Length: 66
Length: 132
Image (cartoon, rainbow over all chains, first blue to last red; front, side):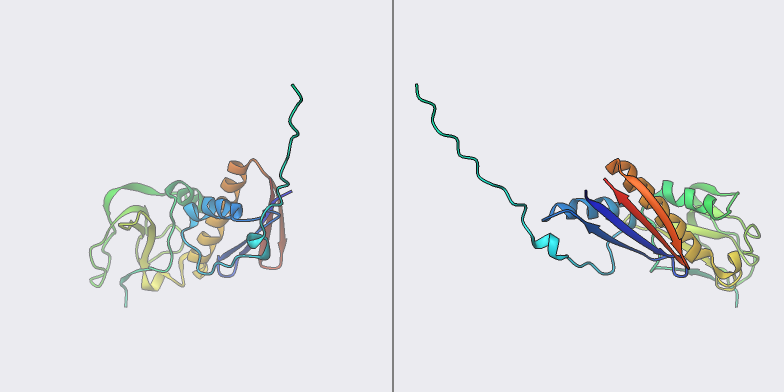
């Protein structure tokens, strides 16, 4: 299940966010929702999951005999 | 010296969340409008127009009003008297506002994703997990 971990430091008011469980650039969609409300982040790093591509197995269907 | 300072490094993008965050940290009187003038209580306080005003004396801001100007990019940036930086909410106005605003951002993101929220506090750090 995808999750976002937010950390807010009450001493500075700064927030950090980490998106987990989302492979590939889809996590950028989540980040976009946040940056619409906060503005561009001071630091942005892509995790290993960002570079992973969802594993899609090709489906091959045999031709049905007429 | 008493004078109004703008905080260019602090920006709030969403007006609705900014107002809610101001209420959250105890600002009971918030004026909203176009080209509202910040009060000039001392000669060094230059004329400033803003869209949101917390009147003088409400949250320890004894030297002047606190305002939020809207930038060309649509962000809201705080303006307050130099001497009120250490007075408004005992010097914690900006940090408490940012923390409250960010908590509201998380709530809004969770609602958009139809996610569940789990919030914990460890020392001075608020940790919020949103599952969707």
